[in-house]
Image (cartoon, rainbow, N blue to C red; front, side, top):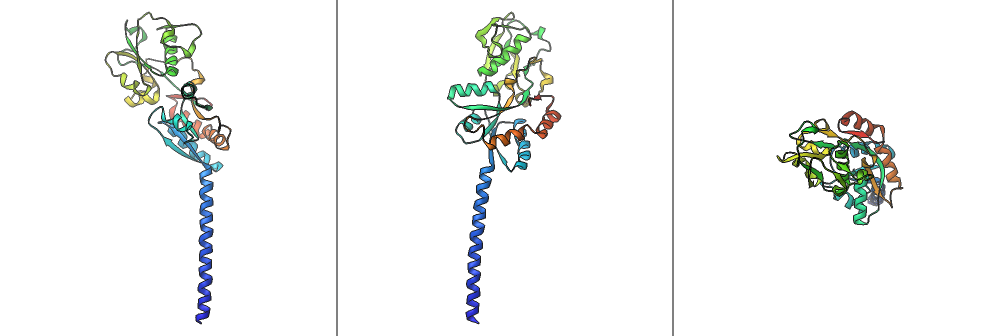
Length: 276
């Protein structure tokens, strides 16, 4: 009896070890598959992060999982992508990306335009362009790409005239006529909302995402951009070395899905327009 018991115990031990090895192999295999199918996307704040989250639900149908890497400024998402710590980012427009590429000698590429934000100028004191006094202070974004866009909007309103042909690439130096002698304040994009409450600031340029921090929407703007240039659409960005990968193709498909479009149209039509 002891002999048979020993045999049974030995067989049981072998089966236990084999089962353990099989489970380990399966677990290891599963981890490898999961890691290969995880797409890391850096983003900043809503509604950008919301779009990434919705795309994350859609992309599961293709066997992928999106890991959102949320940052708190306009520098980290490009640094993370350039350093290959994430696969893509969703937080910027093409001119801003190109500025980063130029400064950092990076190879980031625009993969897909997702939406155009309704940008414009806000005023705490004035309700009509004609009311803006001589010598009024105007807060502009400090980065070149957004500064040019802001100046183009002012030119469309007849407040200034720009050098012919500069379009959205103009700078303060390209202003040829400034009949109201407007004074320019250069402010970091993330701090422009705070400038709105400054007593001596007449006009403040801003995006819906940032101006929302002080309870305003594009409906509160003194005037909005008339001529939208798709180069300024908030876009999905990857690197030159991974833009054609299966991960990025799947991500692009998910971010241009009908679920994402419905979210943009139904929940955010007051602040943006889909660009796909």
